[in-house]
Image 1: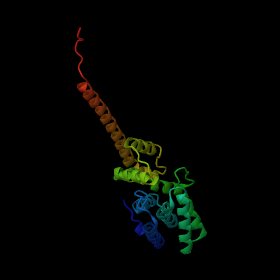
Image 2: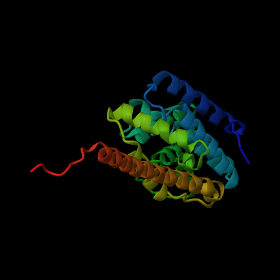
Image 3: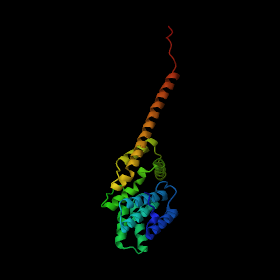
Image 4: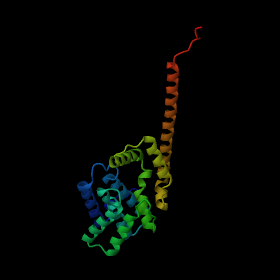
Length: 231
C-alpha cells in the first residue's frame, strides 16, 4: 500500500517545504540523479517502510524528516554531503523548537545513509533501505542513466556503457535490503532489475562478437588474391 508523506504531521510537511525550497535555490543542474526527484522518492519509500514496520509517531516523524534532508548536502559536492545534510536538518529542527533528542536522532539517521556506514538499529536500517529503494524501481533504467550523466558531469570523464553497467551489477549484488519490510516490498523488483542489467551486458557482448566477425569477414573479402608466381 502506498503511503503519502503528506499524511504525516505538520513538522514533516514543513521539512518537505524546506527541502524543496533548498533544492530549488542551491542545487546545480549537473545533479541529474541527486535531485528533488530522488529525495522525493526516498521520502515515499520511508513512508512505506514506516507503515509496514508500524512505527510510532515520533519514530515515523524522525524517519521522514531525515528522508527529506539526507541529500541536501549534495549542493556543495558529494564529499561529506551526509554530514552537511545532517547539519542542515539540525538547524531546521532547532528553528522548529524540536528537542535535542529529536535532533540527535535525525542526525544519526542521515549519517546512516553513508555507503560505508552500518545500521546501528532498526530505524537506521529502514533509512538505509529507503535510500536504496531505487534499486527496485520500475524506472531503474532511466535512474541509472541519470546517475551516469551526473557522474560524467561532475568528474568531466565519460564512462563506457559496459563498464557502467558492470559497476551497477556489482553494486546491486552487494547491496541487500537489511530490513524484512524492505525485502518484502522490493526484493522482487531488485532481482528483476539485476536480471535486466545482466541481459543488457550479454547483448553488448554478443554485438561486440558479431562486429568482430563482420570486420574479419570484410577484411578477408578485401584482401588481394595471390596468383602463381611467373617464372
